[in-house]
Length: 331
Ligand SMILES: Nc1ncnc2c1ncn2[C@@H]1O[C@H](COP(=O)(O)OP(=O)(O)O)[C@@H](O)[C@H]1O
Ligand SMILES: [Mg+2]
Image: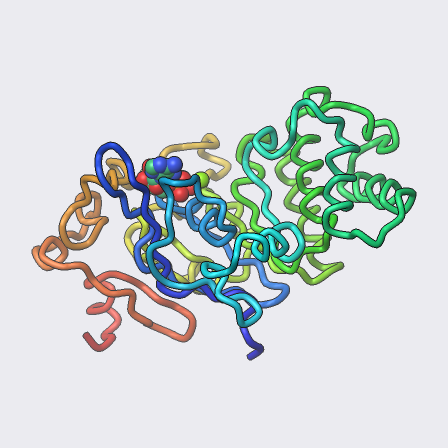
């Protein structure tokens, strides 16, 4: 197997808040290969966005800090890079799209200016007419009708779906090796969502970029991803290739998420039908397994101590005492 493109090792991230220090990421490790789509899934508040922001070094300063671990990309640890080198990597090599495009788009600049500024920054050798043409072509590529005229419009003149496409266009302009897409379709209706997912897949097939796709929706993961990382309360609780995850979901939390996928007989956005309760606050984590107060199988050992993330099969890792015992994995 080829070298991973990006390798996250034992990443720990904390926020300093008025209530104390919150460890939002605790010992997060995963990798992504070239051309692969990795899904990062979990309910709201599990640490998906903080993972993305930590990789990109976009944590809110001064309260958000990486306090341990490393993020290896091209033999460099991104957590240690000087700010100017990280600035080069961001956008050029690793780009990110957010759930709410207005957080990334500048409301007072026309769309064209925002595309052009990206290219001026990252492709300094391009002439201004090349820059203009590349921008228009990219708008066309992401499915924006009448792209020449759209260049002269402001973000608020576009629909949510079109704004999301503009943000994807900006992210793709510099042909990143990795695109981190943080719930890019969550705010959009199902038809637009399907179009955007298809667009990402097409572009990936053309240029071979890797995608880290963040979502709370395993249905979307099923359509898109090669491998999946399931997060719960700042930790990874299961990690598997897509077939293993859907054929043999092993952590009770993953099983609950799977049962909550909207089907034809269920309305969209059904809350977790099989798991009661909520993701715990980082200031009030239960002892032992972080899922123990919601798990249907909790026993004393789950309350006493936290299980490790154990390899149960080739490319399948689970953090659960019961599962380990059921599968006969060595403890
Ligand atoms: N700016 C912040 N200040 C304090 N805590 C934060 C901040 N951003 C995120 N967190 C905490 O980190 C945890 C993970 O959040 P996040 O990564 O945004 O979750 P999600 O999986 O929904 O993307 C949550 O408990 C959240 O409260
Ligand atoms: Mg998020």
